[in-house]
Length: 472
Image 1 (cartoon, rainbow, N blue to C red):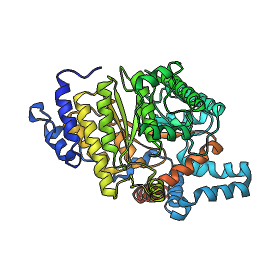
Image 2 (cartoon, rainbow, N blue to C red):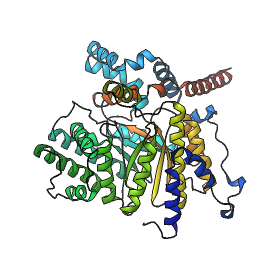
Image 3 (cartoon, one colour):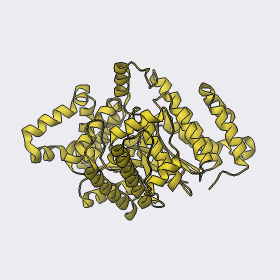
Image 4 (cartoon, rainbow, N blue to C red):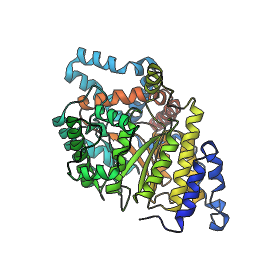
């Protein structure tokens, strides 16, 4: 699985060009597929418009009504911005059982697969029948001040291992994936301290790998209790890696900039151990961050020097408001791009990097184009055609959230592309904090779903007219 001698010189030349920063998109254009490779214009994919409401014909009448109702609520800023408080009040007034009965057929059913194994299986089988692949997500995470102790982290580990087993043991996808938040297994406080330490000195990946294997490593800069917790956390992550290797691809989520360097360090160590023969552990790159492209290039170089395969989940990012507020309050320079246009350029530039690398070595590099942005999806499809990347080869897939952006997901699936939906599951109580956070983080996405709402209405009206004609 190593990079071939023939590939390595051109790859390093390619990466050095990318380090020029803003000139990167033009560099990629110059590195497009040469005419000698023989991809004729008529082999390129038909332009995707995502304007056809017939994509929703697979949905039941009730599902159309539910989606329209939920999206109508999600388009009201005051409801999204205060959804946590509103749900807390509703739970107090209705009681635990009444609140669950209210939420289950509406918001919960729209964005969550279910609680019992039977409910989850039913949801996943329906998704599979539509040509979509589930990417299960255990709705467990922590932020600063929420740490719960080793016993809770061990319980979280058991939930993660159940997720691995559920993803692998069912025939929902030929190439199963799941999501992992490291802060479900390692305290955010330690991740923040490690990030501070990493700004002064780098930890050798070999040390982390040895610690994963049970060796009692003493990490510089950590107190004894912190070191003990770090060792326990690494061994929990090692258990996830051992259980999932060669069976389920584990996509590690990025979180906040004040802990991301520590999360990336741990993820790279997992890659070094488990990605020798394939990309089983993946890292997430948030393209709304100014440093995202340099981080991606650094990890590409690291994967070459350490001889492991690189899996990339490419997102724009969901913590913009919090990152800006934190930077302003601490007097830091803002880590996020100044405008939406800059973020788009960052995303598309990083996308071009990965697609070019995949066209050269599809076994070493993989990407999930995790976006609801139609233009980026079209760009990825177009570049795949130009570079001769198989739409169902597995090296490139697309990802959207369950219950959202179905007009994009279903259209892609109907065209034969690999599409995954991020699928949280669990009880109303367990998924509620997750849903509230996702709603607040994705408020701009939720408030911008007018097009999907309009397409749902068109499909609903078509069915009503059809029903009236049949009844007359």
